[in-house]
Image 1 (cartoon, rainbow, N blue to C red):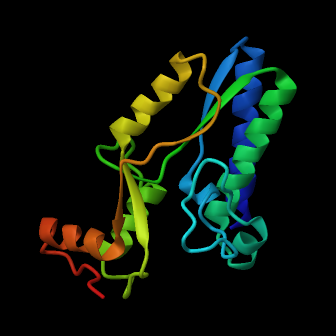
Image 2 (image 1 turned 120 degrees about the horizontal axis):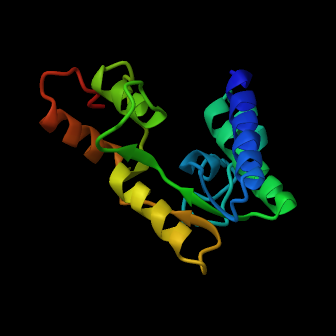
Length: 181
């Protein structure tokens, strides 16, 4: 899975360099809540904010290459943008739901499918953040157009307990073997 890290980092480098080479002055980078929430040393009472980061060592030790790749890619984007003189703003969405343009399964859709297929036998006693893809797209436009925008911005529509989330899925899709424990 370290290929995921290489692809994320190289793709980020290519995008930042292409933007700088084309004379772009402001760049909006899409990160992920995965770059933020994976930190076991953080108190469960901690309210996550834009200053929070995942723990790279923890992600590596637990083979959570998705979160590891997202965090490293964001750090690379920030570093490269600074070196190339670009104004970089970061949007940090959570699990993104809503109409998708691409035919392939995204990380967000995959997470939902694990519950719908019944392949995830139990769900954690935890909350999950969700955002509509249209709101995430609008957030990108807003931070791009507002010259005062800088740094990182969470783009979270709602936070629900996993029990509530799987309950909603069960009501919407009763024909699927949705995880209920």
